[in-house]
Length: 134
Ligand code: GDP
Ligand code: MG
Image 1: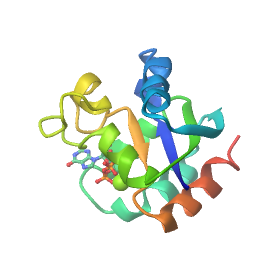
Image 2: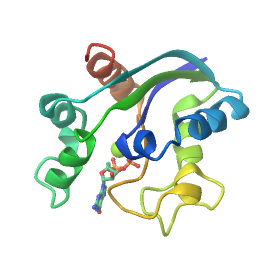
Image 3: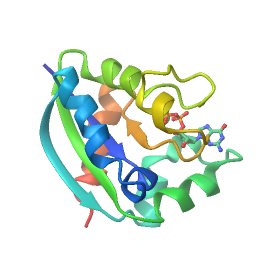
């Protein structure tokens, strides 16, 4: 069994999509091992997205993640890391499959509702950020 870290980003909370997003994961058969809400600080957001530091969209990304509360979840299931990235869909709304969460609900390159870790190293790094935040 594999575990991964998922965030419902501020637009998902603001738009009232928490339930619909969680339903997608539950219907897929993934297990919610832990879940919480928090309001990201600038330091937490910058640590989370540190691989993108210096890119043209970085400041907009940090402003976005810190604008409101998020939902952080630890999800478990077979091949959870790869599976959930597929369920979330491509970050580019024009490439996201129609049945994916981003495909169904997102049209903006920054405000794309969900995050999921890309590999096992990031899973542990990101869990330690979000399961220590307030
Ligand atoms: P993800 O792992 O699928 O979320 O994609 P990345 O790790 O490549 O990017 C992280 C986040 O940065 C994305 O989910 C978007 O919110 C944002 N982002 C990435 N690329 C772009 C871009 O080209 N333009 C803008 N405006 N935002 C981007
Ligand atoms: Mg990423």
